[in-house]
Length: 452
Image (cartoon, rainbow, N blue to C red; front, side, top):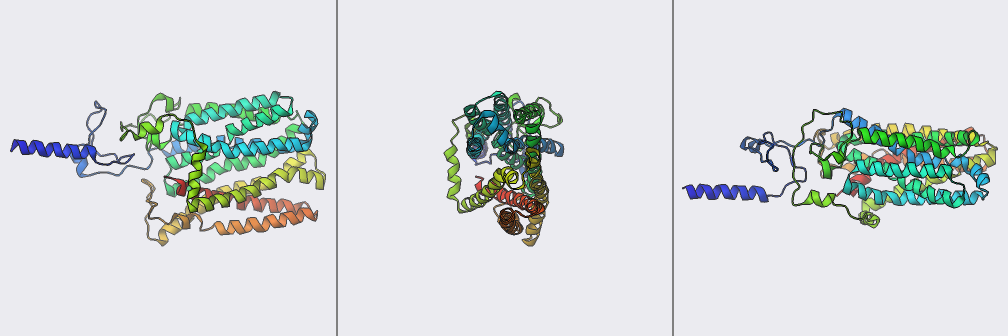
């Protein structure tokens, strides 16, 4: 009799140890004392298993994290747009043609396209917080170098370094949101994060024009250097690690390397969750980032189509903004400061569009769930394998796509016919508003289809 009980007990223990588990297992209601590395659930907990919350980060922590990643996300578009009104001044100061200065814009955009593939892979391996600190440090150093350089070669190379440091912050920001927010919440948070880059597109040209005419073009690099230094300090002090491969839903006890210097939620209780089959250890081992690995995403038809949509609209966005100041200087004889001011309608439209897109996406998500009789679970997250997420994300995108196409065509005709300045400026506002909604919706769906 005793032998049978022992055999049964051994079989139960063995099956429990070898049973497949989730990477982030649900937290049972009862645990043994924390004197063992592996914590086994009690019998009472086994009888009443409880589903783990998608994220244990508080609203306050989420808002602080979103503020910090929004601040960091402003620097890439800021460095791009603050540069445009100063192109002529740089051409004169460095004694090179405008075409050569425009080459630095091209190099900046090329690196901006490549950097997220490398930095994003690194962030998945080593955590988002530390990669934020590294990239912002690179960005700050590049701006200091740009502020003291006196040659076109130095400008060309340091602009690429500047782009490498700032370009991945937007993509990493979306990653942070996916870490801390359930699917039904993400639309609003993404809208908040997009506000930063869109505000930068509005104030960047004004700063560039004013600084270029006032203290000089070197200050278009000194201002971002100072601001990025402040951002580094705030991230070091307040940004927690959010990568789910490291902290799970935020409840794992992690080393000091991943913790902010100032912990504003000291009441949280951490649990010891060991790596399963070495999976977590493997993820956290450092390897050389492979930018080509991201091309595997394009094997999916949905990913390829979303990338094409995003690419076409980003090309539209880049062409409009890259030519805006020079066209208005040539056609309407504007000064550098006034040329910077003409970016305001697009920037304001983008800010409003980014804010509205978050509200629209959350509303579309609720309407889609209601139409399919699905109850939204904001605590644990919805099962997107059975949720028609493509209908939720693209429910309203068709309006913004049509508005962008019609407004862009009208904008080109308005400039060609040298119409009253109010016409192209109003069309810039509409384009900015519509593109922000298209970017937000397409990128949110892309994150879903590209997720493993």
